[in-house]
Amino acid sequence: MPAVQQVLDGLPGSAIFLMPLTGADGEVTDFRIMAASPDALDAVARRGRELVGLSVRDTYPSVVGTELWEGYLRVLETGERYEGEPFDYEEVVAGVPHRSRFVVRASACQAGLIVSWVRLDGSERDRRRLRAMQRLARMGWADWDLVRNVITWSEEAYAIFGREPSLGPMTLEELPAHVVPEDVPALGGSVRRLLEDGRPIDHTFRVADPDGKVRHVRIVAEADRDLDGAPFEVHGFFQDLTTLKRAEEQVLAHERAALAHRTLLDAERDLAARLQHALLPLPQQSLSLGGLTVDVAYQPLQEGLNVGGDWYSAIELPDGSALLVVGDVAGHGLDAVATMAQLRFTAKGMAITGTPLPQILARLNTLLLHSAERNFSTATMIMARYEPDSSRFTWVQAGHLPPLLIRDGEARCLAAPHGVLLGAVATPHHDSASVQLLPGDQLLLYTDGLVEEPGEDIGDGLARLARTAAECSGGGRVLEDILDALVTPDLRRDDICVLHATL
Image 1 (spheres, rainbow, N blue to C red):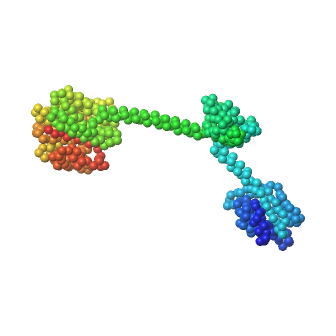
Image 2: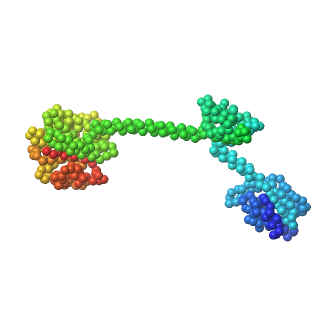
Image 3: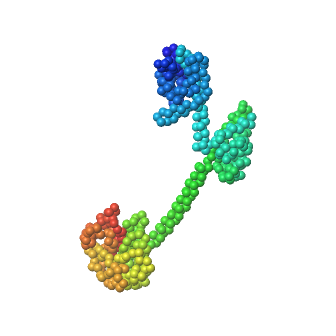
């Protein structure tokens, strides 16, 4: 059929040449596609030469026995042209149904049929897609013919305004009447500029639907203008932004709540910092007290919170002597801080009034035992008084590690007087001990975090401290050098408080 194919190659649209296939009895049982126009397109997108060779019965089985099939047979029998009514055809490919609507024409040609068809469902499919897009985007189009006064709205435009289609669309001039009063001036001005000057608009306003619910609606429109510049037609769309606006309001409300929460946290953090400064000792300082030069290092385990049970006091008493105190409350956190602050300030107060050191420890023990809430267990403490007139260093301890004396490049722990840790017994006994300091002597008061290692005897830790202190005693940064040598920040397990005094 080369000649037929040459003819079809010059035709636009969809056209094929069908050759009838007959059975043993001479009756037509099928048709085969022998030629096809380049633009021929069937229901499942087979095109042009892809159709050549296909059998109608095998490829389009649902056509057999239909009015279309009978029309083909009549053309072969009578030679009269066939033009059928529009019909629906469905074909399932890979489990997916493809449904289309066609108008088919057939005419006799060389013992076969020239069949052409027009697909009617393309525009309908586009309309369905457009409706779906409008519905999903909450958007409806609108056209206003200002010359003929003809207005056309899509279905979704009516839905956006909650308006019955039987009422017809609104004119642009009517639009402000449906808007909440606060938004009327701005919208009215935009509409006037559109109608008078043809300026495009993109404006969001609020409308109240018949149920009293407020919706946020956006209008985007532009005008076609004549040669004089006067608008004669307006095209645009409405978009329902209610869901988006509500989401924005919720986000804004969350942001405001978060801001308020952050403000509260900042205020609480500032208050905590102020209380921390008032309650906790400074992490590092250098003092001159009663003839002694005192350097202090305070390193709580919880650096971020800066709360620990270790503490110190270093003050000059009214008689000119120096009071040096280092303590350690069992545990960490706010409870330990509260107990530490209680002991620290009470001890300072009693020392300032001249209370002897052993009595101060006894009264602090009573204070712990009779506190309203005992969220702690016990506390250790060392308290010393240096009198510059006599160069005498007197100290008491409650279960605490002894002071380290560094003299002439050698270091040793002072013999500890008797003293039970605070909070252990109701009637503890505390003795005092004294040593005469010489020019150049150095003293180290510290908590157990400086010397203790898991599984190690405390005596080994004290010996290590003595060796390290002796090695560092000749430098200009004795306290810093000792800490650098003994403390590994990543491996530290406890608070550390060290007080270094030099005569």
